[in-house]
Length: 418
Ligand SMILES: [Zn+2]
Ligand SMILES: [Zn+2]
Image (cartoon, rainbow, N blue to C red; front, side, top):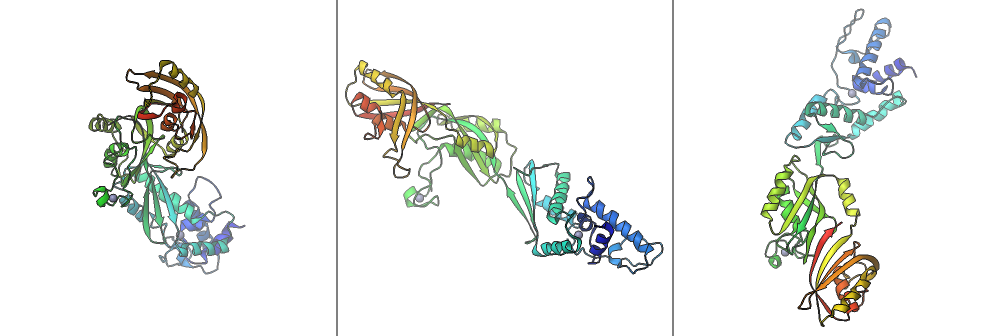
């Protein structure tokens, strides 16, 4: 391929700006912009044009002064990018205005080309070949990114940016995607409330007679207590609460349970997490407590969901018959593998399958009034209440079977999440 010949052919199609001309040779030399390349080639062509006898079209040599030829300069719009590259400062100004009120550290630029731009590029490639070119989309993305980076001093992040700025040339619009903010922490739960917000099943959160127009089944939850102050501080539109496992409403959690709160479309990302923790712990005193608040990532959230930690539970049980001290030793038989069919109480929403889970240790005491306290260290995924009651023989072995009596579960507490 002859660079000069190819360039001449390209310029015959009409005015082609430096970027669009240079881009056809983008894979030659590094350390230069396409604009640099285009400018250099245009100068050579102009010099050649002064030597040659052939008539040249003035449209591609606007702004150049010829010594030996009289060429009237004309200003035109690039027939490939339709003037986009010359307009980049204007476009970046518009983008800066759009993102002005947002807090972010990293961004990513996307470009959606219009049909006519795609067509222009295609027909240019038909004339010039595509041996050394790059796409207009790639150059636009890079050049806008450079301008925004220079003005904002923020970083480009292609993988997990805080915000994505899409220049939609098809709709002539700038579209922003504000990615979620993730905050890690751990909680303890001292009262019987659900972990997450439960929307009213009748109105799905809109409010109706059944839920007293609250939209929620329960007044509060661990999620609301922690997430609402965070939502307020970030100016986001909603939060999602991701706990590392969960305990039932009527189960306390006295061991630290990790969670990640996802804030949807946050306007602010720079939070005083220390202060937030203190405020939450103050307002939620005696209900919940949190610690270890810090920024997190989607990746950590995924890890959190995929790890199923062992736990230690404390069961408070009321056996129907009087238990003798020596009968308690039978509970040692719980150590080992428990075979458990999906409990009756959750069968309607979970697959009815058999699972095997381990119990690593068991400790027990009996009070004077025949109340049993049983502490168990177990593998994740064991249904503890059913371990006590036997669930009509669906859990084996079980405390009720070993003690040969009906068992009422008075209380269940998570003591430790490993
Ligand atoms: Zn152009
Ligand atoms: Zn309702």
